[in-house]
Image (cartoon, rainbow, N blue to C red; front, side):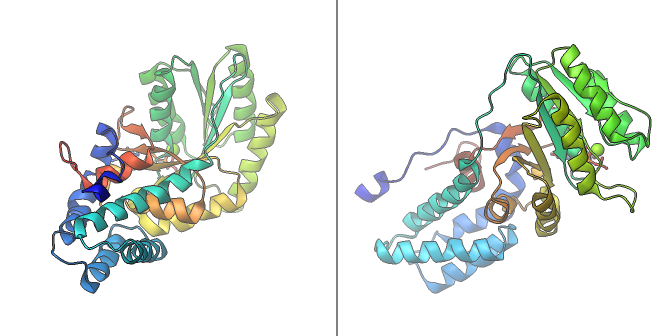
Length: 321
Ligand SMILES: Nc1nc2c(ncn2[C@@H]2O[C@H](COP(=O)(O)OP(=O)(O)OP(=O)(O)O)[C@@H](O)[C@H]2O)c(=O)[nH]1
Ligand SMILES: [Mg+2]
């Protein structure tokens, strides 16, 4: 069929992305795929599709939007075959995610200038674990990495980062519990210069003593970083826990209002059937999604790729068009 040839080819499979989305695919997207195993495109198809998308945590608004786009294209392009309609859905979903990566800035690493990554997010979302993943990721490019225990709220947080530092063989700048995070960051910036580190990753607390404002703290940290490197932090990375669904999204939105987030890391995708969260993140926050977390180990991450992401929702290993 001529029409079928118009569709783009499938993306290269990515093992980590496939692993991270397995629960979502088996939980909801297999059912979505099955929905299109019928002879006609009817009203029931659209209604069931909308319900399933919401179930996968695509979010109410985005689900409505996707189904409406599908209806419009099916009508305008006179599509009769449900399998072709499914392909349109796949393309529209990819397009939506591509919007969220379009404004991703190219990362240019300069010798002698540390690339500073300030990692923020609600407590428990996976910040520290995601930092370990980023260490391994940057090491993979041959970059030297340093860590900073900017979360001084809990002693365990400092220890956790040190454990990762030992495991991955990277220095960790840390002070005692309850120390001023600003002082830790100040020292870390100095150390990064002295050691010529390519990348400096700063862990921060997801919560503070009630009287203290977390956002004010993050602003303060930024100012201290900028005393050393005016254009840093080059990356302000917000970690969003996929398992918390739409609630997590609301909390994340609070961060985006107060801090200039440059990148998003969606963690714990492996632990949920709500992989649809990426679509609400893309639509609601408008900040580029850069990475996904797919487990508790340092290697359990992937760069976010819209086409591979969507294809992994529709197809398992070895499946495809
Ligand atoms: N399955 C899975 N678990 C994860 C992932 N990322 C983090 N975790 C787990 O989530 C829990 C919380 O992770 P942390 O990295 O400690 O989260 P945090 O945001 O630093 O937490 P606080 O320091 O308390 O604010 C830990 O048990 C991690 O092992 C992931 O991608 N997949
Ligand atoms: Mg932590």
